[in-house]
Image (cartoon, rainbow, N blue to C red; front, side, top):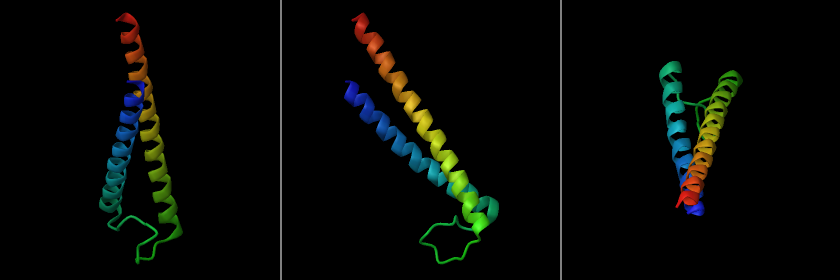
Length: 86
């Protein structure tokens, strides 16, 4: 069961990362009026906008990773407590 919880935590983390990326892209596009700067775009971007986007994306990614890890650890701890009771 411990392995199942870890795999579930990984899946939740991946899904949250995907949703977080889409939210950051949407907010960036709504606030600036431009598509997010990505390496495959043909649209020239300034260094300032690329660095700002990278900083925001990394911050959101770090928060998602920490929350997913904490949630997984909480689930493992809760499972271990209930297993001891039974």
